[in-house]
Length: 148
Image (cartoon, rainbow, N blue to C red; front, side, top):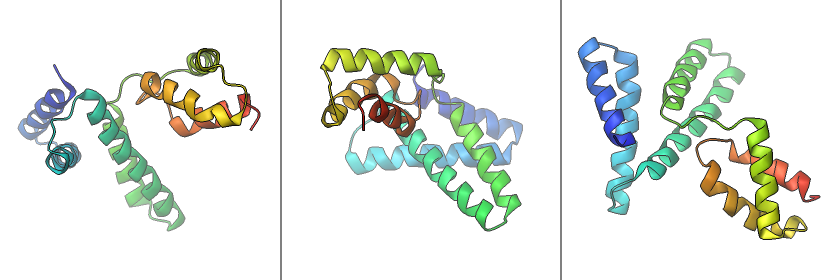
């Protein structure tokens, strides 16, 4: 079952069970997926759907910071719940050790020696870690290893 099919099935289940908050988030997700498919005139595969989900999570994390700064605990709770639900559709996250070994393998495979080679290393890791690790943190670790 593809990720899109799983999301659709869970939307139907949320409708049947009357979970309005969950249904709203899933509907937002399906709308974002369909919008991207229409805009680009393609059918998204699982990797591209994960990209849409990651973008939505990133937007909600940014909103979360703004709501915390604005002292809006009601909206903080709402955004946190949406992030938690969206994260259930992502593959299992890599732990620190797995990320470190991926970075070491990528550095060895690309022959990276300095910060100028960071793009090559990131490109190699992105395919393996997309949706499973915070790529900003991975980038910072790579930069540190390459002496940036």
